[in-house]
Image 1 (cartoon, helix red, strand yellow):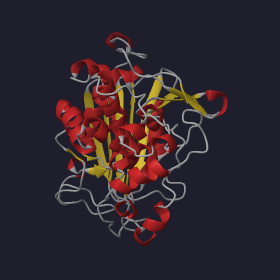
Image 2 (tube, helix red, strand yellow; image 1 turned 180 degrees about the horizontal axis):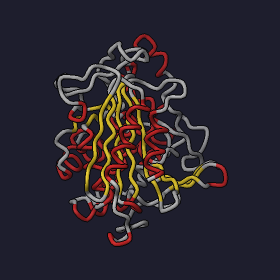
Image 3 (cartoon, rainbow, N blue to C red; image 1 turned 30 degrees about the horizontal axis):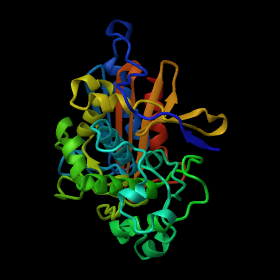
Image 4 (tube, rainbow, N blue to C red; image 1 turned 180 degrees about the vertical axis):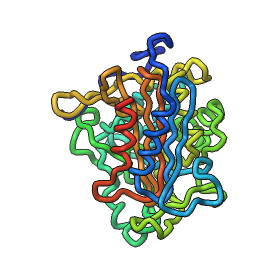
Length: 361
């Protein structure tokens, strides 16, 4: 068995409270600013932003190999790809806390499947922890998306096809017995939440997350091109079209400014200052142990790795032309947002640079 859900968010939970202010070293802003500048250079991408919040103070450094855009890089909205899953995990947790659902319902029942007996027995809890027994993408995704592979393959797979593919899929393993990272599963989860509430995933995110947290610079679909960062291909020059997630909204639709993303992470560091305090504490709870010796821990929103002072929470993501890294450490009261334009290359340094910076603080 590679992974099993062992806990589920319920009551208020604060597993790793930040140390009292007196126990925390005073940040050397000059040294932090220098490290951010070095990280921007190391990313070697057309547009790069590293934004850090420590003890409530923010530092932002920008750069890139491309000419500066009309709007400052730190004010643009960036596609965060799979880091969207941290929003969807928080949304599920908030809905559970509100009593809208328990997380243990069969997804197929919530989706009103006609042949429920033959459908997967996966629940929202399985979908959010990547233990539903689903592949990374539906079996026919590549065939349908191949003709748009360099533009927008996900746009060729709409919501109704995602749901139909899930209801027709017959997992080889029982849900809850095996971990396999799945964009498919998170896409299904978004539609399950919509079916359970009668409200589309996008509207749920606006109502329960973006509004309460004041994330006015965050969008779930492309908007004014002057506000959205332009993705680049591997050559760093050729622009890519704005990402269209098709029916995979809950797995990758969020686009946001570095400042909004810092606000989102700061809410996780100081949940008591927000209307989502209980849910924000709950999504720091480990719910899954996996990997060799079950030494790796996940929450419903984050990968959770140990550091010398305490756990580091993070998620990264990419679209065809943009990348993002979100991470925070309660032990040092620090959050880091890193975004850039251009997709992964062989030995791409971007995520490793961002992760290493946060881990070493």
